Image 1 (cartoon, rainbow, N blue to C red):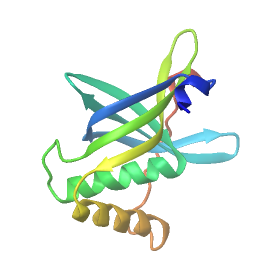
Image 2 (cartoon, rainbow, N blue to C red; image 1 turned 45 degrees about the horizontal axis):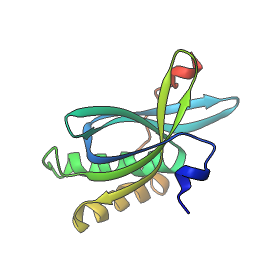
Image 3 (cartoon, rainbow, N blue to C red; image 1 turned 45 degrees about the vertical axis):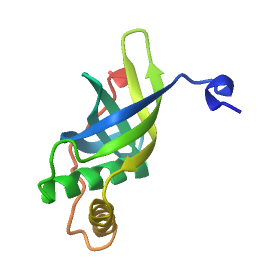
Image 4 (cartoon, one colour; image 1 turned 120 degrees about the horizontal axis):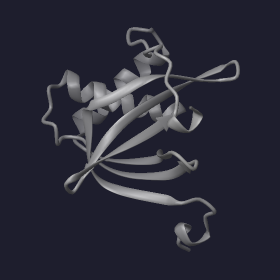
Length: 138
C-alpha cells in the first residue's frame, strides 16, 4: 500500500543535504505549552527548501546539526531523506518534517545522540528559548 494514495494530507519527500548552518531553533507557544521547533533548509538538486519540525524530531534535528558544527564537518555531510506534510493557508504554505532518515557516518550519529541526551539530562546544552511561530499563525 502506498501511503501517498491513502493519506488525507499532501506529502513531500526530499533527498538531499540538510544545511546544518541554516538551522534556527526556539519554542512555539500553543496555549500554556511551549514546544521545541526548528526551521532548517534541505538542498535537493539546485533548490534549497525551507522545512520546519516540532517536538522530539526538532530536538533530534537540532542535535545532528550541533554535532556537525562541533565536528567541523563539510556542508554536505548531513545527507537526509525527509518526509514532510504540508500545512497551508491561503497565504502561506509550510513543510513540516514528519520523518528523517539519516545517511551519515556512525561517529556523527553517536555525537548527535550524546547531544540529545545532554539536553534532557544534565542541561549542558540548553534549548534556545527564542519564540518562533509558523507563518500560518501570523
